[in-house]
Image 1 (cartoon, helix red, strand yellow):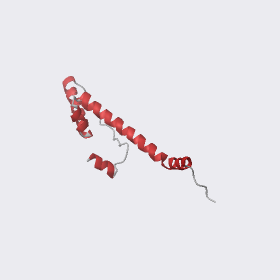
Image 2 (spheres, one colour):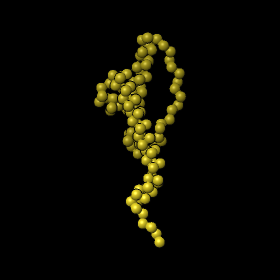
Image 3 (tube, helix red, strand yellow):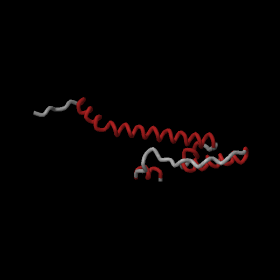
Image 4 (cartoon, helix red, strand yellow):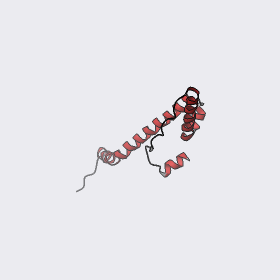
Length: 103
C-alpha cells in the first residue's frame, strides 16, 4: 500500500529537486547585482555622470567612458598605455532571455 506523503515530506522532495537550480539562480543574481553596482560606481564616481545617465547607460558605454577618462589622465599627467586586458567571460551564458533583456 502506498503511503500518502505529508506536506513536510512533499516540501523536502521539492527542495531536493530544485535546490541546486535555486542556489545557482541566487548566485547568478548576486553576481549581476555586484556587476551593476561596480558599473554604477564607475559611471557616477569616476565619470561624474548623473544617476539617470548612469542607470540608463549600456555597460559598454561605461567601459568606453572609463577608457577615455584613463587616456585623458595619462595625457595630462603622463603614464604608459596599459597592457591589453585578458579576454574575459561573463558570469552566465547569453541565453535568449538575457539577450532580450539586454537589447
